[in-house]
Image (cartoon, rainbow, N blue to C red; front, side):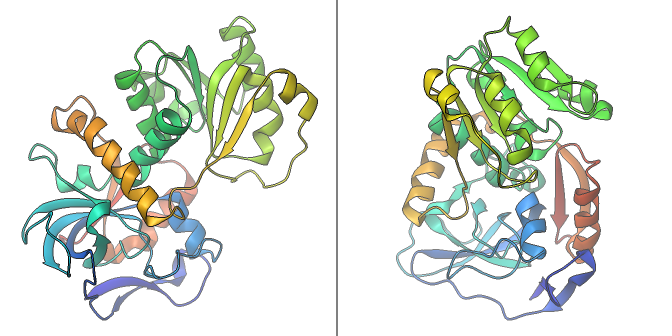
Length: 328
């Protein structure tokens, strides 16, 4: 089969369209003929050599696929050959065929295209896990979502407005994305390049602060994030693009009874991911089936041009998801 491999770690130019051996499904696994996959920020970090796949998972990039069941391994009974499925995978998505655990797969509703389905697992499950399962957002007064134009952020805004419409959604974004973020349902949008978001949060919330913050920046934003949290507020940390080390005023955190929760989806134990996916399938997938939520697709590339897709992601001008296709 064809797949994207790396000559060595580095820039997008290290990616190549290669012939590799087709994987064989093992116990509890299915082999998926990949129609579409998508590009996520962790793919870029892995390409650079800083985010290895979990032990036993494919070294090929790609964390989510949408396609049809090609074959099945032992102890698999949930799906049949030809079924349309979407899967969260530990690696292997940038290929014509990919292995997935059947418990990490979901049926694609007939009203949802393969392209749309390829947008679901990594971003929507990440947003749902961190805001609604770990962050316990439902019914809270307010949430701050950083990076409003990215895949996880746009998914988070949609989920908040659908599952917890009473929650005030505040998002940060660059100046060229403000209107588009607002059109997704954000009640307030802050230009992080021109405005101090902590000051803006203080004004928007009448000094109360927000209940939950979803942040992928890390160290650079730690101090203003903590200033922006309300009493008993929670900072959900899902990335460290702005650094890994920062000082924290523990006394203030204690007095305000605040929480910081670090969270990564990929490295969680198999059974934990299965439980998360099961809850997501029952709570969120019906929203895709009824078109109450529709994934945002910014750009499409043939799989062989995955390097160009990475260049677009690194430039940061995209809004929504970047899709790879095996339908050349």
